Image (cartoon, rainbow, N blue to C red; front, side, top):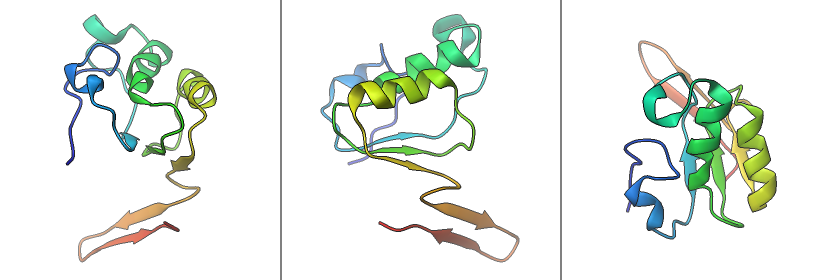
Length: 100
């Protein structure tokens, strides 16, 4: 089952589920009224979906330090776009490369 966090992470009701994996697609300036004024604050809120010792997939090349700090705190195995996996999209196809 795939569940999408609707807004943030820390206070989202879906966060009560003991997930097997967390996917953080990106950290941008969105929902600033609830998540914070800058990418560091927003990253901290969104990274609160990470569970102790559970894998994390990061879908953005550059994430705030607050995300890296949460990964260290929760001791996650992490897969980052551009490092452990990558993708290409053009008009004719999509290409994924990953070691899983």
